[in-house]
Amino acid sequence: MVHACLLDRIARHEIGFNSVSRNASPLRPAYSPPSAGLRQRLLLAIVALLFAVGAGYGALVLATHVDNFILPGNELSFGWLRNAPGIDNTPAERMNFLVMGLDRRPAEGEIASRTDTMFVLTVDPKTKTAGILGIPRDWWVEIPDGDGGYYEERINASYVLGDFYDYKGGGKQLVIDTVEHNLGINIDHYIFIDFEGFKEIIDALGGIDVDVPDYLYDPYYSDTELPGDYFPLDFEPGLQHMDGRLALGYARSRNTSNDFDRIQRQQRVTFAVMDKALSINALDNALDLWNKYKHTVDTDINDAQMPGLAILAAKIPPERIIALSLGPAMSPWTTSEGAAVLLSSEAAIQRIVQSLFTDQKLLEEKATVEIQNGTYVDGLAASTLQFLANLGFPKASLLTSVPPDGSIYDETVIIDYSGKQYTAQKIAAWLELPPESVRVATAADSGYRTTDANIVILLGADAKIPSLDFLDEDTTE
Image (cartoon, rainbow, N blue to C red; front, side, top):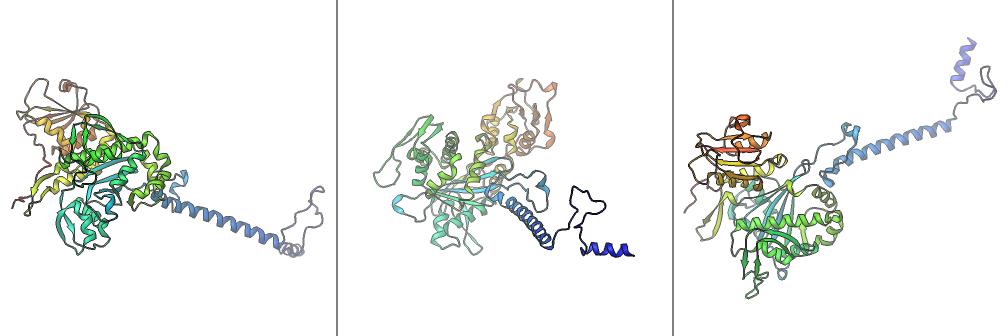
């Protein structure tokens, strides 16, 4: 009983261990329990540690939720923590940017102007691929009226109309809403740049080198469009070095070519700008460049996003960027008022848009394709080549030929010689062929190809190349 009382008092710290016990070492003092003050300090330290760990984990969780915003495609990696509660390891989503060049002169100030150049830039941070979709300025589209309805006008007038009719969000928002409605896509950010800003950026890069495929001559081109104020353009085929003024003229001239050709020239200039920026490591100093030249553009991209976007851009090589145009989906038309515009096929527009957004894997397989005309229809192989190129297949990877034995075939087949099954099946879908029209090459197929192409398309009598340049309905008046 005495032992029990003694133990109880010891547990309540009523009896200490200040004297040497029977079992204590004579060289080491006996254990003394911590005082109340020390226990409180220890407790506070533990609480502070737990709070710090919790705060740090909270900061970690927060960082994983904002890094997609400021570092798209360059998200933070936390190893074994990536699957911890609250951690967001979802890859950044595709981003669509609407880029517009304004037909505005220095003397006009900040007034709303027609968009002279317009294209959608789409970037996939997950696959490190991108695409550019050129939009003709004379495209006749449905423009939202702000009350749930639509009216028809050229797409390049939407910016001016939005400001003039006090559209909610102004001209910028009306351009975005018009593009989203007619293309069926979402626009995440906009970028406006006028002529002077364009020239200043090109000059800041030290000029660009553009591969000019065809001779272009425009003796009456004008920066200002004032009477008699001409800046004649004369571009020979080949690699041409251009400063800002020349590059702008090359991209804008309409004297000897149509709007579709202008889109291709604008895309060549865009690629040349990217090549030059990469070659001089301009993206390494993206934040400094942005702070210096952001006055030349009007955008809703904020300063916090620019470094991350620059890092992402540097990770996308030119060969992983495809450039398409809506031009092949359009046909000339004259309105009842006599305006020359471009009408489009909705089905063809969607075919091109889907190619831009869903077929980036074609770039990964890097297949070369030989198209053989095994029919009596002259030019069918060339038409097929152009059709595939219009949908984003790299034109340099396509070639035409005739069957080595000169035979005529009843059915179209696609022969895969190098395991490029995604590309082979995608081509079959584009040509509206059944999946079974694709076969893996055997020894018996060795004599079909005339080159070392990965894939051979043998066009037969059943081949019907889908058209992009048709109208959905009769629009004549």
